[in-house]
Length: 424
Image (cartoon, rainbow, N blue to C red):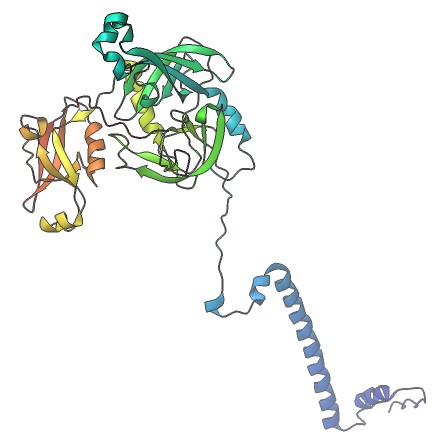
């Protein structure tokens, strides 16, 4: 047998116990319990270390997993992956857009000779015997002002028809202070647009925005000459699109904006935050004559179409079928046993006109033109006007609970003048 190690007074109890276990001098049960306790302690320490490591990783990379909330109280915010960088996004300053568009906006001054009658007392024959015809109506000059937009470097200017209507003399003041006479190339009273021409070149023409890209809520700038104070820029947003039935023009599809538009802004530019033309300022809704946050502009799509036709031919050609229409109200739709109040009611048909020759009858409900749905009388008017005279068009109508398609030979819309609404 191997000699037993001698006990030393300096050896701890744990050391003796280990030697006893090695030499088999202790109770087997006691030794097994001690070994198990040490294993449990070691397992606990290892588990705690792993748990702390996992907790550290979660805190560092997934802190949201530690927010214990019931599903009804949780808040999920969807974040855009890519920030908006389009010109219509909020910007720190509109100065770059303003500097870009201001040279393209002009002031328009018009003069009109108006004859006013002399005082009634001076119409007495005795006075006329002594003073002759010198007491007849005396001419005077009435001045007007508005704004316009340079649309071509060679001198074409787009403005409102009511700005230059009946003017005997038109003067254009450029942004650099130069003043030039202008001639009317043509006008379209039904959209309230006119094109002028000045004898100049290398002018700073405005850039047209793409059609139908404007959205409600986009930033816009109104540039013009309100009240004759000089070039002015105001900012706002697009409040609404497609405004119709306002009684301003025959053909209406207005942009509504809260950018301040006042008298003198008519014919000026409505541009996006990048300085591209999106509309031509035309009218305001006001009880006082000043801006109340409701202004209207003609969309660039309509303005460009009218402008190009005027420059090419001096006038605007539109389709016409010779019908009188009214909106289809829910009550009328019910009386005609229609499920929806979409379409336009044919209230009258011009005898011998295109619609009459094509079989359209009063009381028909016009549902579509060449497959394009008719929502109301305003949309019907615009759809017909967009047709080319001399070509055939298919009109879908509802008559006595039956739907039929009739072919109509489109005519040319005669020129019509509208009532004069209050304009800025």
